[in-house]
Length: 102
Image (tube, rainbow, N blue to C red; front, top):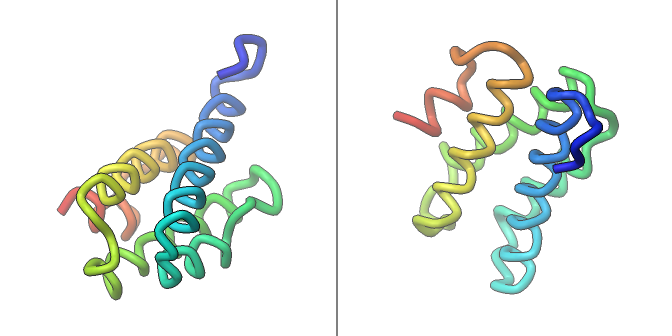
């Protein structure tokens, strides 16, 4: 994280880092379905709540409809992403949070 950025900016930067990690992993493993979901919503258009919510909803749909394409580590990374998104959006009641922890 960059020390002079605000807490929110650091959280958005963390989201980018997580997504880049997933992108690299899914490209390397040629895991096309999760990669397609990620590329549908990332890179973020901006750091506003609509873009971040779109990322959360899309990753929730990935977990719901294609969980078999994810390994344990990737599921854990998606949980970290859900936590970071909850921190930014200031809630923990969205569908992504429930799916990531339930």
